Image (cartoon, rainbow, N blue to C red; front, side, top):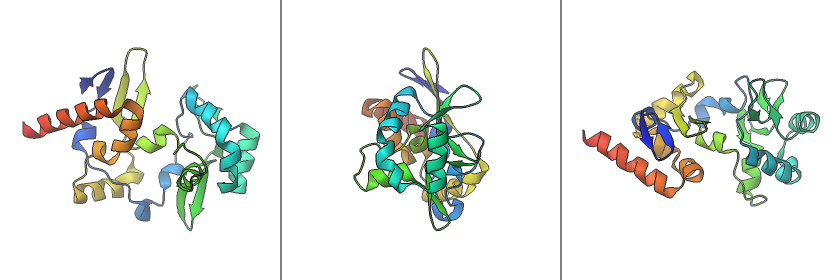
Length: 189
């Protein structure tokens, strides 16, 4: 672990390799697990505002879940998250054949909205835990992502490079440039 500004960062994000392999996992992270995608308070307001524009992209099951539960929920641990369909799929998930995709991201890709998706989804496999004085930046190893780890190793892409856009979105360009310096220093040791 090392400190970077007001973050405590796991060296795993520099040392582990990762590239999403949708053809292998079929977007399992959007349909497996026991909770929705983590959200921050600002994102709950965004979801409320964009829902009418995203709704046409969603499955009827997702619409039903959102209209019953809301555009976001408070999870059993008290954290804010996306609602689920029958305690499984994220309510915002859609399918291209057997591959799970994000309905929010599809609306973004078509220029309907200007918000890509929750930052926690964009950052995955990095998970952020905010504390009062700092944020913890950790690599989340999940066996459904074994193919992504293999592809990352094959392509030699460390986690932090794979999620560069999301890290810049969350922490800013200056923070990311400092992270790259730390990565280079570790590599040179």
